[in-house]
Length: 333
Image (cartoon, rainbow, N blue to C red; front, side):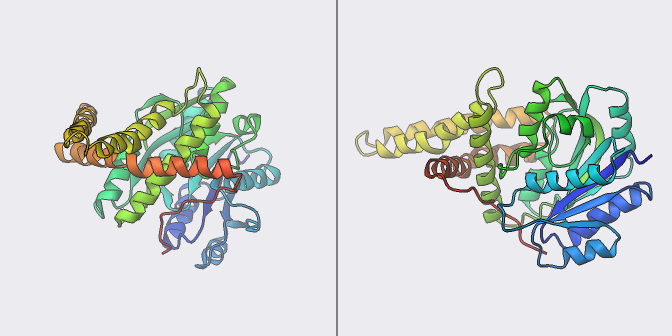
């Protein structure tokens, strides 16, 4: 019986997608169904996937695209064609599986019927290509043990996904933790195991890419807080408030009152140094090197500004009743 299936999503991932699909073909049994859901690629991704023997689904791009919609489409096709599947490995098209992950994750889910999701360590394929890639690699290093959420790469129990009707297709970001909230509300658990899971190719080589990615993060925070910010979850409430304070309110106060206070109001900006120091100490306690902790602290502070822009875009779009569109930061390869 085929126990595991794979769902990959992507658009214009080029060689990244080839590496992704080949890793699944190589590391999983020959009869493992692998589904690739394409969202309007123009770089030959569909043809490349088909040449590898992978089942390809082309999304109807006349409908609003979200990554959640792509994952749900692949999942529904998978369980319709292979109803005996127990687990689905979701993996983004810019990632590739690491040897040993599937075996460890499957064993973890087999040993606990209340586990919905097993996820592991996502690593950047080229962490030294840019400081932005390095930041992403540090971001993926989440604590081991029971977790509140997972990312785009994870081995997930089919019964759990069915119970919560999959991902929320209206979300343009943060769809994985949002589904995890609904899973936990139904009594399911998520675990991060101490195993390398995937290599990820962020391909962030420019400041503008990092800025757009941070904006998307701000949008996801605002939307997540709007959906699940009430007690007891209080999802992303603290983070969204922090962004408003440090990314908007403090700059407005310090600069707006600079003239009438003869510049004294600018002293409020010393709070940024205090905040950066607290983040630095936190990262050092988690084992980061001096340089990594400093890099993370500086960009974590700087991210408050694009994130508050992302939050503002979310609320403005919602107020206008407009359709949300993806905030993309990658350059096709």
